[in-house]
Length: 227
Ligand code: CTP
Ligand code: MG
Image 1 (spheres, rainbow, N blue to C red):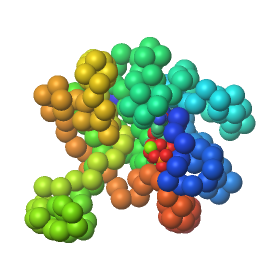
Image 2: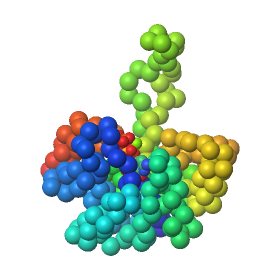
Image 3: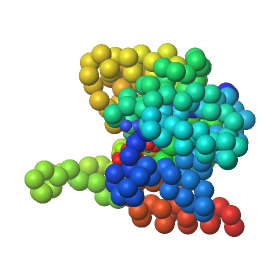
Image 4: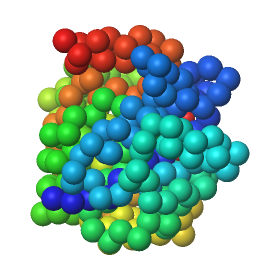
């Protein structure tokens, strides 16, 4: 099943503390952004890649694409203040009307198999997101005091990719903008429409490169995959 992927890459990586967009940091001498792009470059079902980038980083990113022979990037949108704005900007410049996958450029280790399951589920049901079961005991805390222990059985940690039929994502983004609603992921915007969002079980190694420890983890994942 074919799809288009939107890759928001217009963040600043504040929590990484590298003084630059964390997507330019390298794992095994290759920028994180390129690791992520390669997943989709290699997937025959991925028809095109749409990036959202900061205006001042566009030329550098275009250079990286050339250098690393990434050919599927069809459009580059100007990112916004928040991740949600960047995703909507990418959606607006994309000409695709089929299945749209939204994936953080900062998650380079997503498995092809999970992508395919998401795309198929979005095709049959409208919306599907990658998720893993919560491993730790989860408690609700207010002012430093535990209020309750939440039943872990029903708790899932949500990742990207998140896959949607174009019409659902477009409506969700448009209404969120109209209502000035800011969500932490696309699923939240779709949930507001009363649409069902399905989950597809993903893997714990689909980690988002967020803080400096994640880079160590990233190197370890690459080492393991090469064995
Ligand atoms: N992103 C984006 N536009 C923004 C903010 C984030 O396109 N205004 C992208 C990031 O580049 C990243 C993805 O959304 O690929 C997930 O965001 P996050 O991990 O939070 O990255 P940053 O916002 O860059 O990091 P931080 O929050 O630590 O500053
Ligand atoms: Mg952020």
